[in-house]
Length: 574
Image (cartoon, rainbow, N blue to C red; front, side):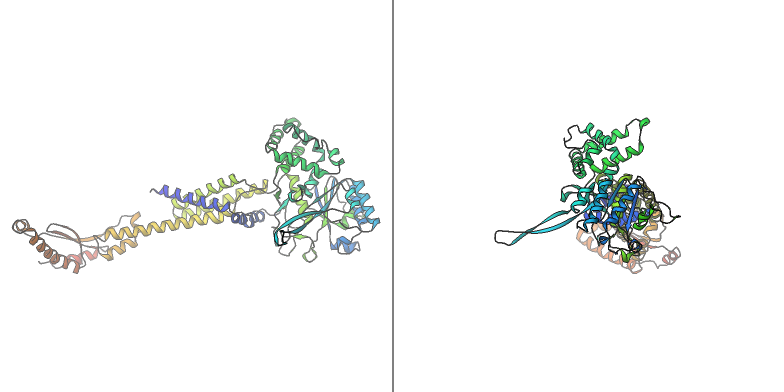
């Protein structure tokens, strides 16, 4: 088998192992826990879109406003005042990541409801409660469980006055938050908070978006809202979004056709910002039910304003205080502390700090919205592309380790690994595309090294055995051992072996054969061989060959000086 063939076999084996692990749940978990986390840490903090602002309810604000530290006990008239100030400041959309599913004082609830009704751009969050029902057979014995998700809506006055309500469920520790729900399928395909906020934020583009939907899906349902006012006027934005999602999920080609239409639009009338947001809407509706979060950094990387400052920003309590610009912004309101002991709503993420400060739920919602705004969530490669990358990498690494000497190969693989890391890191930073990192660098590269070394060890050991077997017929054991131990040098360089030869011949052998019968001649020759072989073996020689009555004996050595000693052997007398 040629050297190239062996290298190709090793490359194929490394590719196969990498692909096998990558399609297993274990491989996906390792890529998430190690590969994706390394990409985030190598990339570091990146700037969040300025259109997103978080207003944080925290203990500092509670102290300054002389309120309880529990935000649920804050008067809702204060939230009404904040909404009025945000509307006055030009906020485009306001989202409360706070639960209003219990009545407070009638006056406060009425004030907040009126503020929401006047604003017409406030989205409230709803909770989802999971109930477990034990199923029993006719005899009353349990035979299974049924899990039901129940929506817990805000109290009626606030529900009726808000623009929309949406859930935003997230797992708590010890699970690390990496994804968020786009549509909550178990609760009837409800769009989650970031999606509804984004749909309202881009409402001015809704008609153009629907025009593209009609063009490539002319049989859209009659109950699909045709413009933004109709979508908002129905007071059920979620229902219209579910209809759109059904259209995109029923025909997977619509998204591709719409994106092609946008790309082929006349450049002279190109509205790059609008087209960018429409692309994001298309990708949002045709995406799976969950998306990976493209975090911007640790807590408060997204612009975060304490609640008390947001209240004072429009009132200019202090003359030198800079006024906060809420114009055209999406504002998310929720708990957001700056120190770990005070956190009540933190989630464990890749950017959780050593001090214990996690990213709050409201900031995760704002992160998901900002990803939609940029049309840049973390996007794993599809199955086929991932397999091709892993296959090609394994093939190259396996062949390199097998074809070249270890020192050259180590340097080459290190350079290839650095180049691969730089390329995928740049792609991850610029476009959010997540290439596999753990399997190629931490599995395939070391495995190729170990495989190549094991194969070379096997071949070297096999060569040793073959050399010993071949030379044992002609050379003494001590010479064979030395040659076998230096087999690596024998492959690359010729080696001189010094020897003394002895050739014997029985006198009148032909005449003797003619006078003796075969049996007697055989017995005689056996005694003859015993006589001539004995002294040769006694003096550490090797009988190399025997032809009839002739014997060839050798005394070989790697030391040239020993040849003279061999030549001083006394003549053999028979």
